Image (cartoon, rainbow, N blue to C red; front, side, top):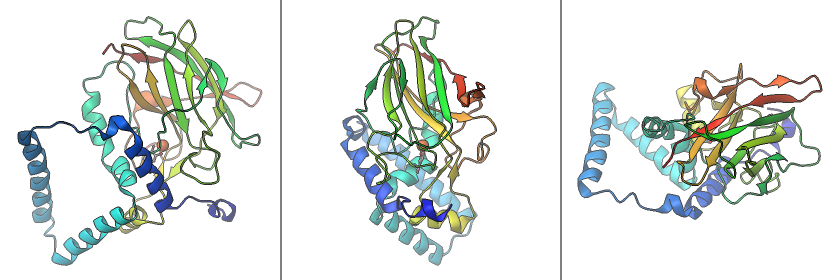
Length: 285
Ligand code: DHB
Ligand code: FE
């Protein structure tokens, strides 16, 4: 990272605070799971048993327990829980839930989704700065049901990082809504979205999450990716991400959220624009 990037790098505390606020505002995610005492006891009991197993297998010491306790406290104080959970844990849940979902493969939502973005017509350019950096990219495709019927009026809610790996709404130097939008498919369920190629994303590393990564010798990177949430009336919403063929960190994503079915290979059209097609298939709900 160069010095020019560094001066406006969002801090872990800043990104974490924004992600915490976004999560708390989201009414759907605030709803309680409604689990019975038996289910809570079963799940939490098994988590504790798993910890017990790790403590014995690794002969964990008191200083290590105190270090873990201090680290967990600092994650809370730093407001980094949305970052820690979505990067280390969400993929386990996504993998389990997606076993019962047909159609397009899902991936984690991550901490940076913001609802209520600008509605855009099927053929559109995402909101961006006049001097937005990055290779122009056009993502087109069709939204269909799993029987192949096109879904007109479906919503392709798209968000991604900029050419420096930063997300609007979580990095103070970016305008609200930058590289975010809700694209509505046309009469044939089609869309064509013009944007710029995102850069790989680095977990903010100046807080407790970064300290853990460094202590463990793990790198803080996610491969470049585009987030999508595809919705259509009467159909199960698919939350997913698209990755880029031969992209750096594709095989070592810190969030373990890549899937081979979600890798796209845009090709230069000869005029400096990378173009790629990806279709989405939704099952009825
Ligand atoms: C995190 C950030 C992302 O952009 C993402 O897709 C997943 C996780 C994170 O910082 O935790
Ligand atoms: Fe992301």
